[in-house]
Image (cartoon, rainbow, N blue to C red; front, top):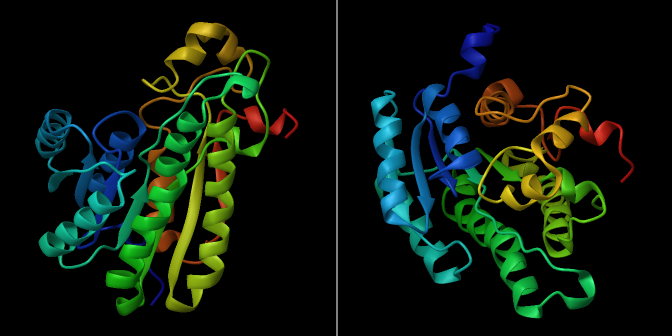
Length: 263
């Protein structure tokens, strides 16, 4: 029998792990998964921020838990994966969101900063995806991996934004998602990426300071910034059976910025 739209988007009985989930876009996406019915584990480096975020999620009626981990550290990622599976039994949805940026002109960009960005934004995504694939999703022949990229991964930046490592890492995330989708489709595992545009956050504070909120709004056809609801829909679509025939794809959630800029 064909399911209804509500049934297709329902995540009741599902489990989800969200990295970088204590604030900002990660917390918004954790809310989305929890509001759709999933049990949610969030992770970040700071226990105090995780405790506060889980308290907020629980107050909203979401079955939420937390584990502190540095997603640039392979040992921490292994422990995060193992402890999540110990608590949940399996993971249906892995949402790789933990990330870092670094601003510097390309000619002066520190190598250690390049490595910091790449280790968290790319290597960390691979290690945790590999762990969850091998230990949960492949054996169960089911899973959805959602990787947070960025519209900066689609091309260069306006003059004054010098984030070459970040742009490169997010381009890698988009192609990593495509490559993994092609390889793991045989296991019924879907892998997709989200490319947010300008959202107010700790990471984008420097860009907002450089350009100003009004100018960033005016650069988008919709004349607005992303808010605390705008990633919810795509997150649940990718995670649920509503998106069961979508894999290897990216979608820009940017008010239309990417459709009028060359990349």
